[in-house]
Image (cartoon, rainbow, N blue to C red):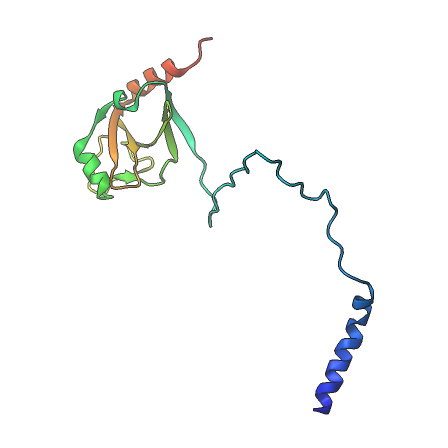
Length: 155
């Protein structure tokens, strides 16, 4: 008991200078201004455990994505079963108006195709590629050039 009282007394003596200084002061008043009334708070970026890979827009068009190529029903089913998919979702992007689709190339770039269903000469667009409602559209390289030329501003 005696040793405990000595320890408490030593602790109080050590804390005495901090108690004599008074209450802690806040940071400067203008440190973080309040959000003005009527404005929305900024949206924070999503938190990720790992750094995101770079992403490239490969196709940009004002057309509807359904007109870009041919809908592949068998590949869409395989995409829903996760046997035909992008390796990194949306690493390459195709923008059609307000829709953003993932892009993979038949020769293997960003494409997971263990059963070898892809045609090496085609480009594959994935709408909702990370879900069971996946739609796969195939197009040729020439189709992609035409779409990009239509979306380019006149010079």
